[in-house]
Length: 222
Ligand SMILES: *[C@@H]1O[C@H](CO)[C@@H](O)[C@H](O)[C@H]1NC(C)=O
Ligand SMILES: *[C@@H]1O[C@H](CO)[C@@H](O)[C@H](O)[C@H]1NC(C)=O
Ligand SMILES: *[C@@H]1O[C@H](CO)[C@@H](O)[C@H](O)[C@H]1NC(C)=O
Image (cartoon, rainbow, N blue to C red; front, side, top):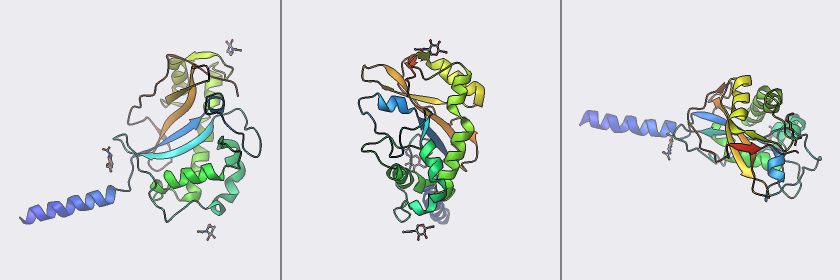
């Protein structure tokens, strides 16, 4: 009987202490050309057209069972005053493409409230954004692709060549998500890489994602 109660206590503790926990992050980057030429279209941010580079979508805490926590703390809403020193970097590496045109605060706020609040125990608001920027710059996806002769010029490339170029140059296997342009062609939309739960280094992804792409996909101009 005693052991039974102890077990229940332990289980309760375990459930409580892991409820806000997560196992790893996805760093998700998007190719702006594939957002803008899809049926959803895009609007350039107030500051103007972003440079032709991958832009950050977000840093998403995730569980190894494939699901993820979201909107974990409504008591720590996004506060733009905390990231004033990062805004110019955010504008170039984390540009918004949503309509109507805006300065990006809405996008960043959404990402913090939905995802960032779930990794708050590891990265506070300023660290969440600065860490994401650092990881993005470090992995330099466009550089890795271009070094392998893969250019955003509207040509088609095989999924394998894109994956191998990134894995070969940076050491980590990316997951690639496609969308369709207005003519229905499959194209490179988002690239996922995994990061350890402290946000300090890239890791091989502990789960496999099934993303629907054709064997050969377009890399559109932007
Ligand atoms: C995945 O794991 C987390 C943490 O252990 C748990 O809270 C969540 O309910 C699990 N989700 C599914 C769909 O199994
Ligand atoms: C937002 O952050 C600033 C700077 O850290 C702080 O002074 C201010 O109190 C915060 N505002 C809210 C509503 O929490
Ligand atoms: C895109 O670049 C590749 C590699 O330089 C080249 O082989 C291909 O012909 C180019 N495609 C277009 C449409 O310019």
